[in-house]
Image (cartoon, rainbow, N blue to C red; front, side):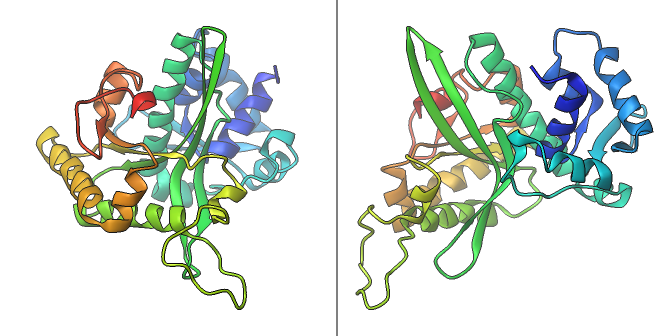
Length: 288
């Protein structure tokens, strides 16, 4: 196991920002809080990390890497090839804090459940802001890409998921339209020069096969509004799945589900809290 200061730097490089409480829950959940806060303060004295104080939080700190810390972590073997989106100033931290910390909250729910179950899912198995190209030269950016390995009965099952965290800051229609972007990524098959464009994807030259053996599941985690409002937003996701031809085709191949962050934290992701976007009774995310 890497020393704790190394893990703290790697976790902040990976997640962009996290509170003291979140780093404690992610890296040393069974230790006292000072186990994490003391090395964080030492790293700050060394000029590798800094923090911003969260408003109305009894002076809770959200930590991020400084420029020196970001440069140092680029050479960490576990982080090579990861997209660098560091937050290296108090101003940038204050702008990104609400969404970034909500994404970390979502990860903590999966990490705690994996720890309880004995599954394999570590602090580096969650990559925020993963970008992939689309056919028109644009790109889709997932809030996070999760790698997760189910273990038990001498069997191992590797799962991947794109995770979208919605804080009700955009319209429900814009949220549902994210499904169209995922469907475009799923169907994107670059055409060779002089080759006639196919009406239907053949599956042999899909661009996503460059990174994944199976297209990742698509999980929506919603928060920031009343249960009534969040229920309607999930219904809109289901309507998009049923009504858009390309999204409907995607849904026949790729498991997709939605949950509120509050249910995710209270009951855990492998409880029956996920609403399948194709309809049906709630179920665990592993059984969508």
